[in-house]
Image (cartoon, rainbow, N blue to C red):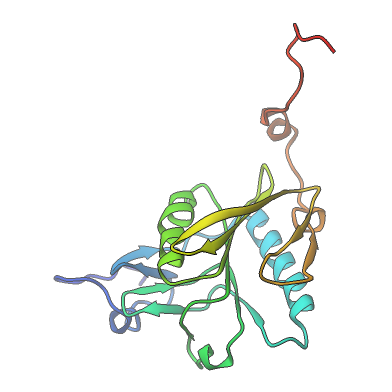
Length: 205
């Protein structure tokens, strides 16, 4: 149980994915399989639950819906992922077992083990499949980076810190108080390790 799927040759596909052990979380990117089963940290859970609640409240009675992992999103025959959160605005994409096609918005909450996967591999994947808006959420030091599709590339649209009110270029009217999202205890040693701006000792005021 939980063993990495084995394939004799060639890339992994959606059909292979359907036979993967269901006691693990798996993703396929470009036909390559990745085990995403590591238990999320408490901060990850706090952020995820808070964003689900706030996005859900905002989208209530609108045409879009918010989903959260574990939920399969089939982008192609060789690209299957489980974003931490995502928004779907077309009912035809919602199947009984999975979501068919790219979401309007994808959100990934970074952890030390997922930084490269989320910031490089999945950013490029979402770009290839036309995901309009992509959020990268860093638990601490707390921030949200919003990337917006601009032709054949992503551009950094905005960055928000814990004290900010987040707004979205795609979800008109959305406002999220990030002090309510990043609402978890921080060890004093972590606070001390954050570089803070200030005048050099030799600077004049």
